[in-house]
Image (cartoon, rainbow, N blue to C red; front, side):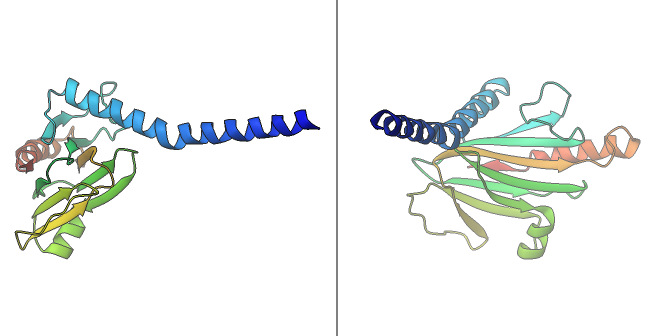
Length: 186
């Protein structure tokens, strides 16, 4: 009987360890690899928005990305100080969104073009990103404070193009690339 109880206890301990690895460690490992890839391949800097060109199949860091998308990404670290993110929605394009992801891959903040225009009545926005234990007091009337659940993470700006191969789509890409440069960090 003693051996049977020890086997059950060993299985339960193993299950807890596997559960911990699957739910805590693997997402952080994956996020670390994504951050490293974004910073190395794109020659981007930490806490800076990096503009990407139109997607090309087979070379994207973003899995199963929409081929009619233009991306910008951000790898952030707010452990020492808040990060000010200035976002500008382009006049053209079918859809625009900004998403923030914590170190464990949780998507904790999303803003899209429709929400920005309806809630804030503008095409531009200032987000102050702070860490989980940071203390920050708003300094500008139009800024929005977002608290990250982790000190490190990633951000992603997506812009969707209706038809990148049409004459209108090619012109739309040119306009979106200009607008892409208007989002930055300080």
